[in-house]
Image (tube, rainbow, N blue to C red; front, side, top):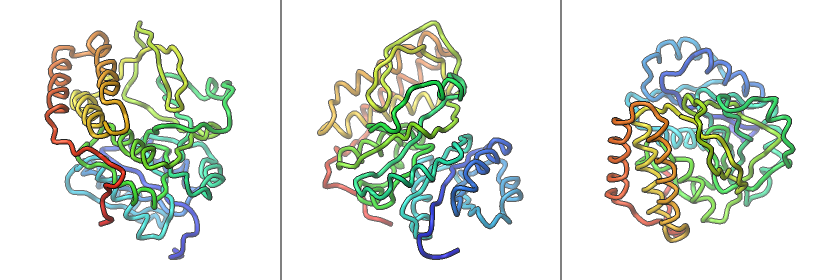
Length: 307
């Protein structure tokens, strides 16, 4: 491969992936980029993964022999992007599928040095479908305050300047944390509405509850509440990590408002999620640990040096 920056790269974090879905994921971007980094967080099926992709010249596999979380793996992807002299990297979950020209469209926005993150319109396949998305009258793009990791293409230089993905968060709200730092440091984050990402958030099931909903561009709607069926450990980290973030960025965002957000996130779960007794127990622990966590209050002047 040419050592000069001659295109784009992507990184996918793996943990016990469904290989058919992963293959769809890779094939959706293969013709759009030069190189794909697969970071494996100690999957049980790593042997099958390496057998399938080891001889693929377009794919670079890195194996972690313990699961240190999504943030650790995302930082590894960014470091590989630096090693291969890329300025931008597309980040993907293992089960995501991109639209066919997402990179070409993204590249229309990368020359603006104030833009640090590009994200597509997210289609949760348990809640909506492509036809409904195509029927929406969306503007070409929207400025957003946060973006989920999967489908986001980030500027490596901005990642260096605002600090790495926070590895202490482990598996949840890592994307909120990073987006907040981009916002606080004056970077633009843009949702490209003409491109999409097919994603499955948990194993969502519709409930009888409707609630106000605000998307990442600030648009309010009334939407049906979905039971996510996330694992108990994931439910714990959702509560804990959003409270950590509320405390971490209190110089720039209302801590009380973020705490109210966490409560609003938790309350409906008690009525609609399964294993209610165990769920209440882990969410209570998440609240306690979120308030007890030794948080260092973030200021713009603080950033981590590149390793």
